[in-house]
Length: 68
Image (cartoon, one colour):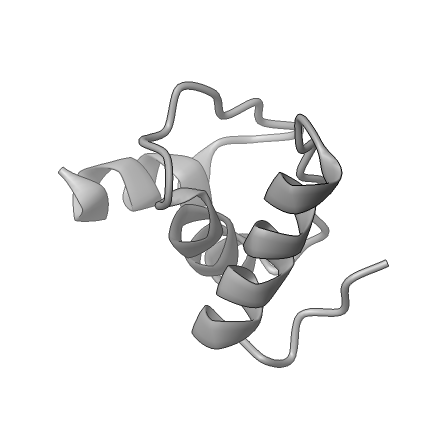
């Protein structure tokens, strides 16, 4: 499932909205998807704790992603 989704993500033209991803896997999908698409991503967290958890997780999967 993950490789199929990532191929769809990588090949989708223009902007892409991804929602309903299993909790805890958002950072993996975002890091891999951004690497495949070579672009910029936006993650909207529901609260500060979720934002910090996501930032820590995405840094684990790709430490070169800049968090603003």
